[in-house]
Structures are given as structure tokens and as C-alpha cells.
Length: 290
Image (tube, rainbow, N blue to C red; front, side, top):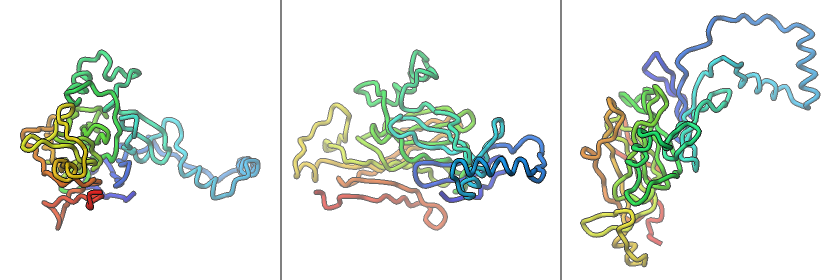
């Protein structure tokens, strides 16, 4: 993880390129506390605990550095992918406490997400593939919205590797606002990378999908026998650039676009900023088509 120096007073942001992104909490501790020098009885008690548990002083030091008393706020919160849960996790740093499970791609009965609630049922239905109501996901590589190429802590984005979906999450209330199924895409692993001002969210396919010439890929409809020749000629990957509306938190497919890619296996995609603004980069695997 790398520390990002944000251009905002409300939040500090620390981000990673992997499975989690960390944003600073909005406020510090309430009130000031003066710590007096450790009294000998307390020092003896601490040493007794260290010795009984066969700890080293470095272990005790690490424990104190990560301990956050009840009622105190963590310095940062981490926006982490939930993997096969299909959700996003909000984890405190340094305490590593799980503060919230953000329901995204999978129904969550304990918080009423996707069970009888009209709003979330519509959200999950909109994000399904048109063949069946999707009730599972595999979240990978969250991203934070940007302003002027700096993380601003307003929105989070997450991809569903399993079903090639992307979701937007408001970091004001930590709730999912929109889910879209990526057109012409079977699986997605290339993250959900924001352009320098979050005008677009870039997403790459993982495995190529069968395409019909001039018609692309439609789940449950498109069928192409998997042969070596067909794989090379009739399977394709995608690089998708989803137009994002900050005001509503929704994606606009009418202003979005895709680039058709050869039938390689794609991985992570990033959007450039600064000297590389206007470029997007994606790595590929199996370019030999084996």
C-alpha cells in the first residue's frame, strides 16, 4: 500500500493497487488525553502478561500500535473486496475491525438487501444478465473516485469477476447506488479504474467470450463451439469505459464505449494521469492463443 497525500481537508486517503483501498476517517479523537508515566505496578503487570504469554517486547509494541479503544475512531478505513461473498468490506485501520459489510452483488438477508425491498431488488435485477436473477458474485479490485487525479473519497467502485458486473458505492452512506452488466463481456477481472476526474470507469474482460460477427456476445444466447479455429476467429475480449454521473451515482451506457480485443486473457487495467493522461493500459496473458 502507498500513502496518498490528498488535496482535501475532510479526509485523508491511503490507497492500494490490490485488494483493498483505505480512506481516512473524517474526525479525530474527541477531547485530549494526557498519558502519565507508567506507574511501577502497571509496568510490572504488563511485564507479567508479556512473560506469561511468552511474547517479545516487539510483539507488545505491535499490539499497542494497533489497539483502538472502544468508542475511539480508527485513523483510516479500508475499502476491501469481499471475494466470493460478492460484497465489499469496510475495515478499520489500525484496529482491523470489521465496521460494515456493504451489500453489493449478493442478497444479504440480515440487512434486507435483495429480499422484499423494492429498491434493492430493482438494483440487483438491473445488474443481472437478462437470463436469470444473479445471486452471487466475486468482488475484486476496488477503486476510489478521483478529482484532478487525486483520490477524493466520494465514491467507490467494485467489479464482479464472476459475472462481469461493476457497481458504484457512495462513501457518504456506504450503500450501493448502481450495478451494470458489462455488454459483450463474460467475465471481468480488470478492476474498475477511475479516469483522472472519474468521467469514466475502465473495466477489462478476463476470459474472451464467444462473439457472433456484428452482434457481439449475449449471455444465454450466443453459442460458438469451442475449437482452436473458432477460439482465434470468433472469441473476443473487451475494454469497457463506463461513463459515470457523479450527481446520481449511476453509470450511463448510452455515453459509454467498448474496444474489441483479441481472444487473449486480460488482467488488470489502469487509466493514466499526468504525462500519460488519455491512455489506458491493460496486461494480457496467453497471447499465443494456446
